[in-house]
Amino acid sequence: LNTVISASEKNSKWSRALHFLRIMVQTKVESDIISLSAAISACEKAGEWEKALGLFSLIAQSKMELNAITFSAAISACDKGCKWGKALQLVSVMTQSKVKLDRLVVSAASSACEKG
Image 1 (cartoon, rainbow, N blue to C red):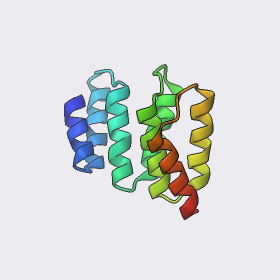
Image 2: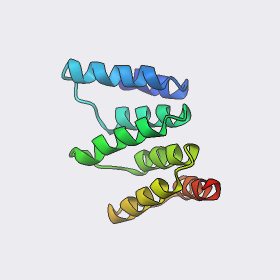
Image 3: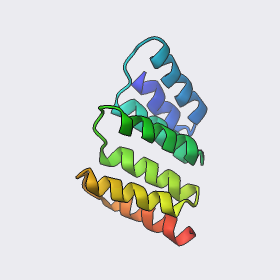
Image 4: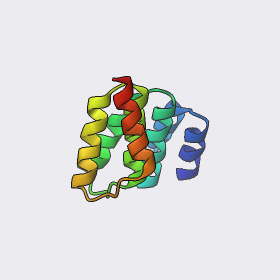
């Protein structure tokens, strides 16, 4: 299912990505950081920043380890939603989590602040 969710992300089909995540939950197939990050990215590409941050919160509350890709997708969603405050909060969480900042994260956070 990771492949299907990733394909949905690449085609900006956020609702399809979320549908397959629901199927994973219903069939008790454990989702992982890859499937959830791809779903966040699909939501980000479609401008669905609230859904992206909802998925990010699920990951943060789980035992999954957050990574730069997950943070980058969530911060990019904040950028698209003009939510600079939330983008900066995620950067703060990222540094507290000891996840290394990369160019994409800094660029997305900067862009969100410029729009704010």
